[in-house]
Image 1: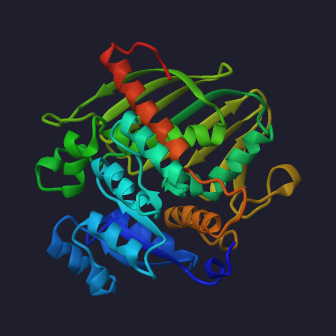
Image 2: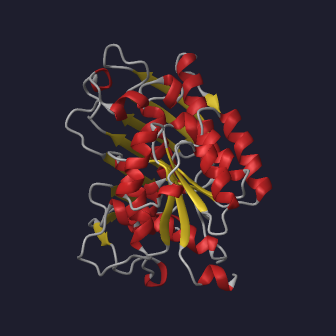
Image 3: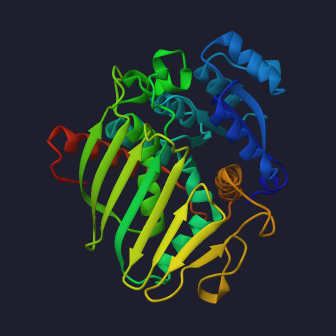
Length: 378
């Protein structure tokens, strides 16, 4: 690690995520939480007036507020104080062109999922980023929760034996009505194939569920059979997904993702069943992880309380009993990125491999659905 990298904050730029963007604000809070980043540049909207207004509200200097991401990439690369990394907070169809523009300038990348709108373009991007030797963080936020990381360690250390069954669901109700036809911008792009790609709920939240299942279980998916549904009339993309899963080694699973499940706010839940016990995690109760063994009372493990081999407790920020949540999980990814940028060894980031796996999953689900729910090998 160079002395220069060890003594200053990481200079961050952002594309998208301007005024009114939930995820843009989440990125900015996550980046600030550990005081490792400073936001110094942005192309915060495709509308120039809105881009500059958003930049002014965030105290970005006028000469570093850009109306175009390509201009931003070129200009920042030429500055002696140019950005070190860019956060891409845009609709899906822009992930690849924006990432490529900054990769060509040697700028590290933080990008929302999914990586692309097709596996082919994801593979081309991954090849170029690797050729340039750049860091790439794909923001699978839920892998930042301390209790998700605790679950991963417990599984890896054999706490529940050999994995037999993986059940994961991610259910919401915010698209239960055709709000994309009523002026809701966030719903509109997510249900526009030109911006979201060929997958609706599948790409938006199904990929999060798929990543979480693999992250905790450590299993590789070998085959799947899937059905996509669209319940809201006039909607262009799926709003409900059901997938049967076959993993290497013989484990089986189910994935359910829906944005029309009335009464569900943000119900991301994972259950992993092994030969000697099971683990359950509910994202709406992120401080808890349930461990159950046959014939024994269920045990609730809490964040900050040592558990697992050697009494290991995974990293967290504040003492147990002071709740941590979504923003802290998001910030953990930024903290890990900062550690990698500063040259620390063995920092695991969700990145290009995860993005490629997510795109392969999406395309396999789409193919299975087209072929009448047939089994598709990955």
